[in-house]
Length: 216
Ligand code: AMP
Image 1 (spheres, rainbow, N blue to C red):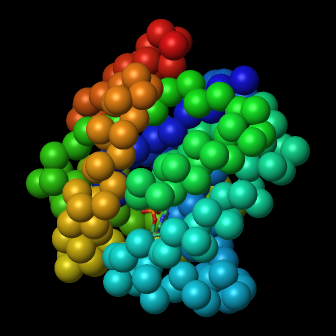
Image 2: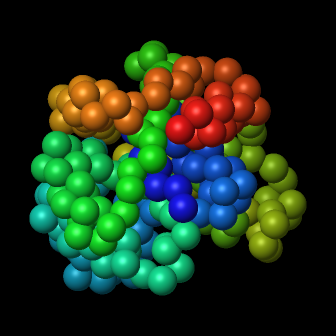
């Protein structure tokens, strides 16, 4: 069983790499951002309380996120191992996760830090586009969206995430440096952290990640 945490600024490529890792190791990805977006789309009580924070690029309050993770972590389909993508994002979230893991007898294997400079993040996120139908991610310059009819599941419906607009990107980066980067020291002092250079080809980054997981 492997339990892994992915830390890194928004747009570092956590989601893309997480998918590959989960396939390879047979573990489940828990992306707090994806769960929140699904709740916003369905206008659930959770989605309604999270929406305004997300649109402003702010973090959703810790109590809401911790409650959500508590529900996810105990689902039977996650018993083979979990890759946490986008969680924890604050020290209180990390402490809550530590406590949950002790309670459930789970072990944290690795914390992978995907490092990407701010300038590169701005370039990546401002050009990011997503297909509503197949959920694939594109970039207007580096990986342009296909002809709409070539969608895996029907017709591509390309949109830009509300929080990928320029001023919100700057806000999210500031939030990352302010509230999430303290986790680097937190996990480094526990001997769990591995730094991964997040600039390069998808394959070369994936290679670094698998080595980091195997050297556990
Ligand atoms: P992401 O897709 O991971 O970039 O998350 C999108 C947005 O969801 C963030 O900007 C936050 O508003 C919210 N969010 C996702 N994960 C968390 C978390 N662990 N703690 C607080 N807010 C979160």
